[in-house]
Image (cartoon, rainbow over all chains, first blue to last red; front, side):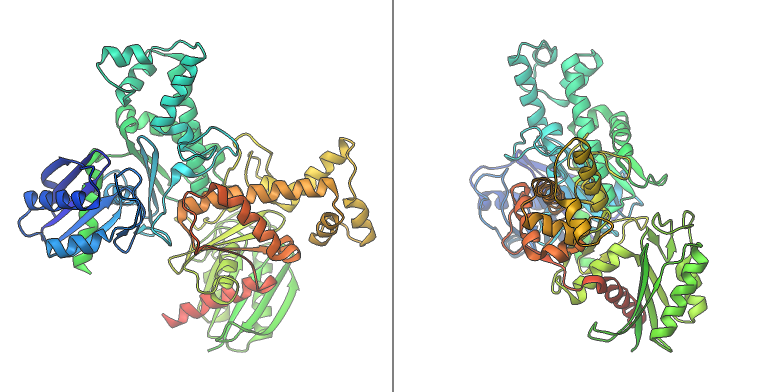
Length: 312
Length: 312
């Protein structure tokens, strides 16, 4: 049975033909258009057509809360401020069953079915990017919540009244561990006269922003500012993840996204070490693992949800 | 079909015969013995016998993490430091199917099937007592987590490095909103020379500790210390509940326990007001409600789980 997984991001849309063993057999990619939902869904249909002639089902991850195939809004996509019945539209246009779900949830499903979280039943996927995303698999099923907005680890508050977050609130995990927040901290520190090698490394590497690679080099060079900011990010992630474990009693935490891919399992071990003192019950069976699928987590997870759709 | 619900607490054990409409038909109560698991389970069997001759099934709530009927430990019960296969023991002794579950989870199930949370699908039960307990119903099912320890709202961290909690960690919700923590704050303030009417009210009412009624009277008298401590508790609960909602996208929060019963819906409205600024998506459909079943939440929830056991 042929299924296609699609991952719609703020920058790119990735589609993949995914085999029964969750292996990516073929892929297609396009830039995310900025003209609103119709344009985005056009590109999704084109990409699906490129990777499979007659898929049995299609799964799509979208960066926003999704309820029953309706994307309530998607802040990182242009023109998606109002609900879009993406599942229904795509199903009619493609002529096959389509499941649409939140991208962070879909990524967690991907790591769970075929990545670092294989064998888990209660899993949190942590995605380190511009912000901090989270996806949950609870009791062996993708968890969406009452209104499709579950998984917002980035907006678990770890320090009431703390650092300003991009969401306008204070003390969220993302205010310390999101790339945008970390870049703001660097600007503030430089503005206050602090020296850092971060911008030099950025210029040397020909990068226009503080990529995960730039952070990794600054850490390797023991740049004090980079070291401090990453330490704070690790602490914030540890406390936030510990709160989630105390609440949900998870067996597995998978950490992915740019910085996790670059710094690997040692970063995840540091997050686990930061979480441990806050855990009410320290279970030896609990695993903290770096994500294994990279950018494919989304398409693999979306394909798995599509497969579920036609199997049941 | 006759089912019995049992709620094992640190002080009392309550058993109730519960009808098909979740109404309590008969009840029996005893002091919790301090001689270890065997004594406690003896009393449970006696109380079940008092309320029903031949129940079809029995449900039991125990204050500790429970996996498949095994109580891993129960810090508020004497001699329950090691795992106790309570479900199996009780099932053999009573000769009927027995389900054993965590008491806070069982209470949340009670409020969900027959109390303030009726009609909910994604519910958090918040229990204000010596500590702050939490129970979850997710997707219309009691949620237990990977190792039976889920629901610990009291140990969601809202202020990294903040007030010392009874668990030995810092900044937990319970460090601000648990009765024991609040009593410690009163002692500290009095030690620092602050005046409060709390102890006078306690003496006047002939109480040996700061009961919910004492707090309520001190608030009504606009005692500054009591007002400040309750304000901080409300803020901590608001932030903690908001973190949980951002993570789990709940439709319903039910708040119960001594202080909630005494101060009622106005207290819950204050917690909701404290949570709202921290919510990533403010859903109009979300409800914050004071618990309706009082001390019966546990036995009603345990009976509902027992009924599920023999129905499926």
